[in-house]
View (cartoon, rainbow, N blue to C red):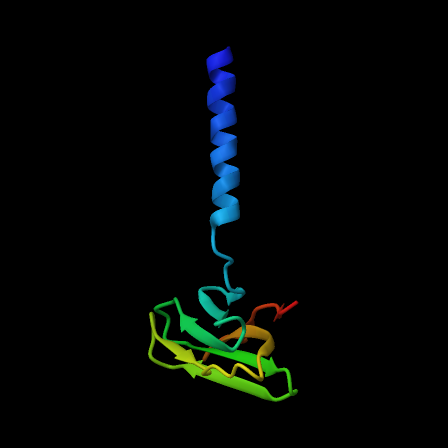
Length: 114
């Protein structure tokens, strides 16, 4: 019984250390397998297409100065499009948008920088 408790305590301690040491993930939202991610501490966004369905994927985003932007990946599965990084005018919210030809477009929820 003591051996099990020791093993359990060791596993819990190592799990806690891994959780503390793990780098913070960037914000990512998806509409099906079409995703928008903030990168470089919210200095820009990238839209990536994860479906082999022929639909383009876009990332709609707003910057601190209120400007709206959109990047679109038209290249098919595995293709991505970036907004570019602006350190003095970071993104404060973004969402993924799957542009469909024969069905209503799919939108993710908004992801906000806090």
